[in-house]
Image 1 (cartoon, rainbow, N blue to C red):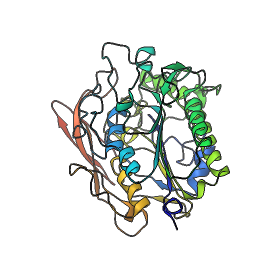
Image 2 (cartoon, helix red, strand yellow; image 1 turned 90 degrees about the vertical axis):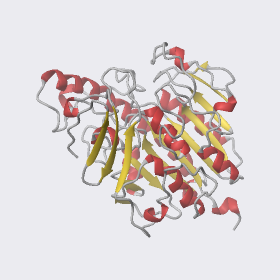
Image 3 (cartoon, one colour; image 1 turned 180 degrees about the vertical axis):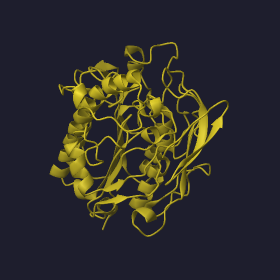
Length: 400
């Protein structure tokens, strides 16, 4: 058996702000996710998966490098990924893999004085040397344009406006890339999506927002009419974006299944972090509560992990890269930085070892945005509780 036959493709789809509870297979009566529900039946569903940092910039950097923030060079929201950062793309290339990235980068230089939402950040051009080592790269720096955004990269040499819903455009561009491959080498592909990140009232590929009166709220929302009304308004659009993005992901899975790639593809669906949506009277991410730090994580590999299951393994996005590596090659990558904190949990995934008792999570700094957590903090997440160590003047009351 040659290396191409033995080495699986690795395809990771990472969304933003999609909390673990917000799926049909997870029991959320508000969520319409038929694609992910079907995927969950034959996947490992890590029901205790967490983000190492409940904020997109920090979470993606930690996943790509295997190092937490700020050790990986990102201390603040506007910090770019250092030019010399070693990522999963570099490591897979060393193993002879093709590497490709599609979608939201948010790891290059941005002007803090520009609006976070809008064309200024969306039209930033990420130069080839700052694309994390990916051979093929197509996406956008940031800007949170869920419709008619700007994309650039390997083929689109300058930021170009492409009409359509972001999840659809990014997924379809990735499928176009897959169609053009000869498949002679295995592939590591990272698909990075904004949705269901706000603005929640943006069009969701024609899927109607949920009727306010139909939305079920969690029990931990306070009896404050202003908070409950705000939560209902957010969730109305939130679940529309979840449905639209589930549908888009379905096209990628359908392509893989229609090709000869699916059986030997490690396919991952996850999110960078969740969203509070009024739980505990709080909104957005950055908080050390379950709705913010717990993320969906499905892992499918029909060739070797054909039996689906719900798994309580306490796994972090920081561990995801090393764990995928361990599943692919059966041994750790010894040349990675000694500062790396991510752990290869592939033996636990194969049910041949115990998993960790806790996971480190933190907010290395407080991003300067309304409704976000205004404190830096560090914590240990166990199966039973989250123990927070505030940095500065912070106070949290956590119910796990």
